[in-house]
Image (cartoon, rainbow, N blue to C red):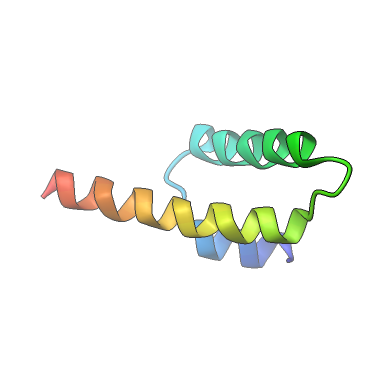
Length: 61
């Protein structure tokens, strides 16, 4: 996945959100070693991130 694709899927609102996302990916990858699949981890976290964003949007309304 290219950085541009990742950025378009995340729709982050601040640098700290992006940093938190990347730290989560890194932590999950390290914990999944030696058989960790980075692409799968990123895909799962993007789904979770979108759900989180949807909940945040619903609460703000």
